[in-house]
Image 1 (spheres, rainbow, N blue to C red):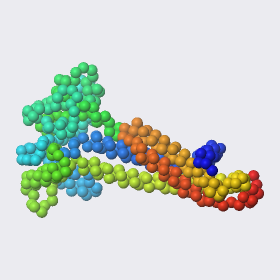
Image 2: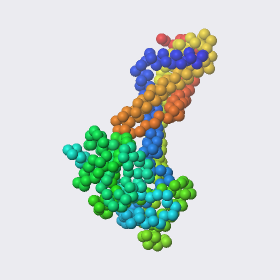
Image 3: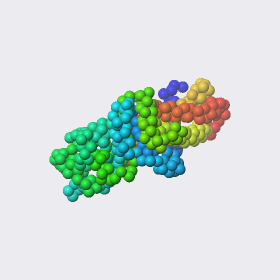
Image 4: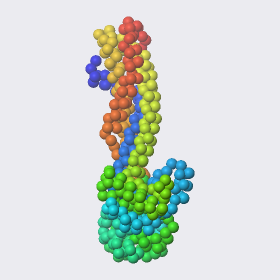
Length: 408
């Protein structure tokens, strides 16, 4: 029995019984589609975290009041009791950190921006030191960033995101135009490079002003975040973290056995944590998809057993004409594997379609991995072969005399 002939017979059987084929393959399709969709979205999220969320370089160390992640509400309440990270802390780091290449500080709020008759109420207002654009890898597409003098003297200048220009300022050169940020006037001196969307939300609806002007307008009641460029990786980052921790502990007069009242972290921490969460989530979904594949395999086995019963006379004729047991066995194994493989192909197409549809609707990133497609097709085929062994063995063991006597 040649392989191509077996595949042809399997496809003919699928086409001849369309509704039965659909019901047979639905378990395999759901399982494979789930795996492909989850892997595609998970890899897209990881890629996005690397390129977008983790905008600060791998050598950037942060000092903040609270860690980027916490598990329980008790931890959150405990972290809230900590002292704020202040502008004086930033100035002390700037003056005393020997290993730091550069340092910056930032604070953000959601506020309103007005220009003429146009206004927004949900723009991100960033209070930045003059070093922050470089530390955050923000490219200025038009104009310039803050100067050190403008930062020191609380000058009312602003760098804006492209959404502010496109949706509010209208045509013409945006530089030099005056906008009002929560009632305070600021002159635009620069426009940031477009960043696109994250989970359906624009990353370009923001206004950055000098941190000193920001604190003068909104007050210094909230904690800052300090960003330090270590200028290297590995041991260099560890050394900078140790120095920053020592400087902050000295500033806060903490006893040697007292825990830190602040968090010193690297920009890779959140990326690694999210990566673990995504991997765990993907593992759970893949396990559930595996159950669907097993169910699909059982359905395929049942259908193949029905097929053996329906084709008893055909099997008898083949054996009477010289077909060996291994020929019959191979025929039915090829049919079950082909059936499962077709379900796998449909599942791959469905999974990629679902992932890309999610990307179009909410801008959730997705990256198709070739290995996930090949692995899904291999597993689907293996499921068909495994669950096709018993029906194929049963068909191969039929007595040709008894098979020929079977009624049509």
